[in-house]
Length: 212
Image (tube, rainbow, N blue to C red):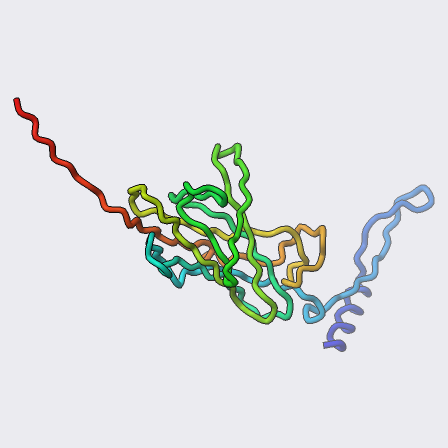
């Protein structure tokens, strides 16, 4: 590879990359040296992440009947990778309210609290969070636990949608602070996953006889 690189550099530099530069009050052609960098010497490939649903349904009031999201990366790496996401769907969410239809938990049993921001373009609240895939592992699970209330509701959806995180070098190592290159790419065919929340409250139909 080094011999081919040197040979190609010599040819291109002998031909010259010519441009006009200002020298001593007049325009003159000049030559710029060219240096080739083999692709093998650069880390150009980014990690790709996706989300799936090992548990597609969650039932209110049934112990252990939780929904589950699995966020995975396509490469085993010795460093952890933090992946960002936002929650969408018909099911309402609120980390601190009993009116929320569900809560999110990590594999250690700790609740995941999402940030609430108002989107002035859609006039809706957006709930965002993140989860970290541990070092030397390819995935991490998020558990969706329905809130058992006494409100009769139809089936509702909780959609986890992956988003790009802050900055990085693009190689998945989390370096390159301040760069606009995200530390991962999103698999477009696995960019979101849906859990359906099923209610456990019975619907009551009353018949009233009215005498005329």
